[in-house]
Image (cartoon, rainbow, N blue to C red; front, side, top):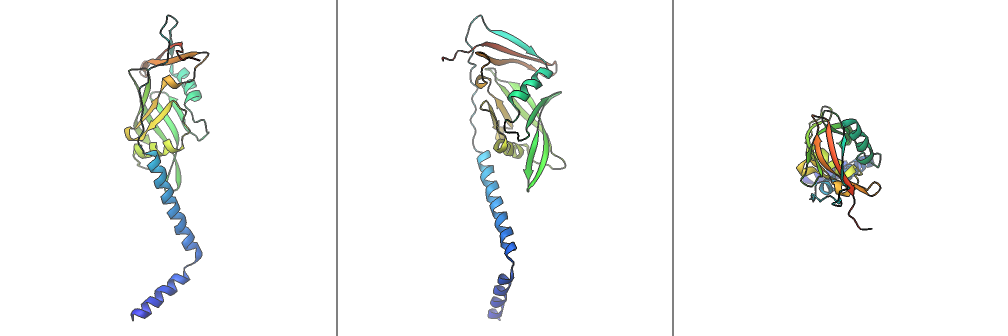
Length: 203
C-alpha cells in the first residue's frame, strides 16, 4: 500500500507542467527581492541637524515667500530628479504624491506632512496621514518603499522608522555663492522666511 502511494506521488510530480515550477520560482524570486529591498530601505538612517554654512557678516538678509513661491522651489529642489513620479505640493498642508507597489500592483498615494523647523534652520517633514485608495497600509511601509525608489537629492533624507523626511538646508547647492537656512515656516499665515548669506566654505 505504501509503495503504491509513493508511486502515485512520483507520477503526480512528473505530470506537473513546467509553467507550475516557473510560476513558483518567480514567486520565490519576488519574495526574496521584496525582503531585500525592505531590509535595505528600513535599515538605520542617521540624520544630523547641521549648522548652516552662512558666513557671519552684515551681508546676511531675509527672504519672505508665500506658498505659491514655495511650490515653485519645491518643484525645482524636491521633485524626483529620476522622473519616478514623486512630487511635493504646499497648500493647506504639505502633500507628497507618488505611487507604491503592493502585491505586485501599483497604487497612487497622497501623504500629508507637517513641517517642523530645527534649531539650526533645517526642515523636518513629519508624516501625519496617508491616502492610498481603499488600502490600509502603515505609513512606515509606504515610506520604506519611497526611500528605495525615490531618487532624492543629497540634502533630502527619508527616515521611515520616524515617519520623517529631513531637508538639510546646509547641503542645498549655492546660488551665486549664497546659502540659505529656514527661519520661519508658518502654514497658517502663509509665511516662510529664509535667511540668506555668503557661503563660508573655502574654495
